[in-house]
Length: 391
Image 1 (cartoon, rainbow, N blue to C red):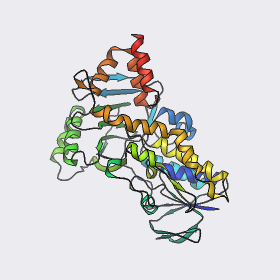
Image 2 (image 1 turned 180 degrees about the vertical axis):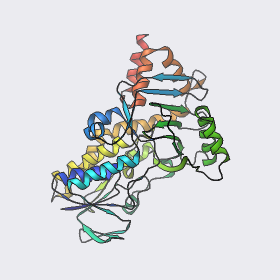
Image 3 (image 1 turned 120 degrees about the vertical axis):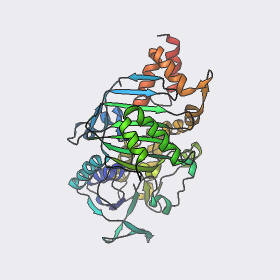
């Protein structure tokens, strides 16, 4: 059995590694070498515990032991995560994961996939490197997945968030993540320290506001951290400067109705989606690396178990729903309330931080939620228990 994977990010590279380790022939395609993808690069402590290569590998990463939450009214709360989490350069993470896939036996082609066609039970794949055939096709090609569209799965504008920011070269790096909530629109601002630069960014619902307003909000935030950089960005003739590289990207942020009807594999036409291409991103935080790798592992298990019987590959839909689907759907349910809700005359995020400063149980719950150690399904009951403890 030969499997073609389009996209060599964390989802595609992990899938290629797992399949190759199990003796399946893998063709891995990506249009470019590993690159500094526009995202924070956060890897939760949950992911570090579950995937040893993320925790123990030699690839440089910035370990985070402090997390500062800032409200729109500049009320602050600094917490120490229960377990340290990591910030990776996406270029370094991508390079490491591709190398693992190739060392396991996958054939990597740095070539753009120009066309795909399913004919007589086989996929025909046209690239700049030539034409290939495969028995099964996997889309791991990100939020704007071409394979997803060709498979007939459509996401609406409501199923996306938009992010922009700058990667900034600096020798002043503190192992602390800053997250600031907004009151004008949903989403948040961030400062993620990496090993050799800082990622500043902002994310909000797609078309909820303009890129110009997001930039202005982010520069205002940067000014509180680095006034000189803020002046540099304000006066720059373009989006980038000698030490600040601009980025912008779409991020999946699926609506509840989309989660309910989502089907990311088809046995008859022998295709599946993983990672961002499938929409597997936390709608509240935008975190997707864990779900990219986890979904790749689940699909690999389904494919390995069903070699020669791809008619049963639809087990994958049951597997991802059981593993994390309920959590991501619940996050989608909470998203509007979390970012736009009010409680006791103030935005919910404002009250949340205010209560957490005074109440240890709420503080610990919030700490675990933001760090990825507290799920959404059991969040309400834990908050109630914490509030009733009066500590």
